[in-house]
Length: 362
Image 1: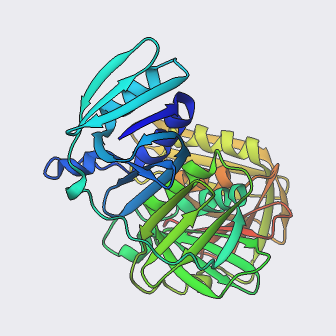
Image 2 (image 1 turned 180 degrees about the vertical axis):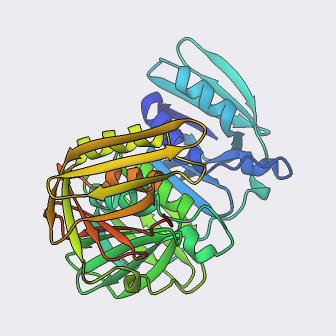
């Protein structure tokens, strides 16, 4: 291999693929990035056997070839070079990188052991604006379970039908749903692994325009003009989560989001080992309180508009804060659905997003 490439473009490519690099002691090849010439461009690939990322960038190809380079060393070196152009040559798996002010050699590895990143047909299931997709995934991701006891709950459920996509996640203690409109799309439902969703969010951050998604029986590919993410999907049947979302409420309270969040954080200082705080909504105000036998107690008051009757409920403050974080409105609506029943949070006049928390026993 003998190529010349722009340093900034190469740095951007490395940053895109390196998050898929595995830290695997028993399989050193998974700690590398595959560099390969491909139809007049340089292709970078990395995989942890669950997620694979390919990225293409323009380069002057003097001689074709391929090599697997240690990701950490390669990334650290490339990121710190300030010269505009880099020359990369490979002989016997030794990568020589030369620029105006630097010369280095990195010991690479033979590519024969580099895992094959699966290819699936790019029959587009749907297209979606990159920022809309990022927002939808961020809106629900925190509610996905961190436990692998029930694998289907450790990912994000996506259901596409009738020109809309529903994103949902739950860990059995809280549930998030976000609905977005689509211009088209085939009916499809799948469970996206948490790590894959995180990578899509990260990459979408720097992309404008649409991303394309195609789904096979057990894999998904998310791709743009210069990159693609290929991931396995989670097997299993996602629970009928919509049954958990109450259709009616007994009482409703409206509060300022910033004031509510400040009161929750103050109360959290005095919560117990189960992170419980109590919400007591009255005629014109809401009390946010907590009591801890080892620390003391607190009651914070904030203005509140209430509909129907007063109510009180105990909830996990972490779950409350996670919900407020993804509801992008100035005021928050709390729907009380009965003693022992879920508390529903919505953004004021925000109909496409729902956050549900199971209460704690008082």
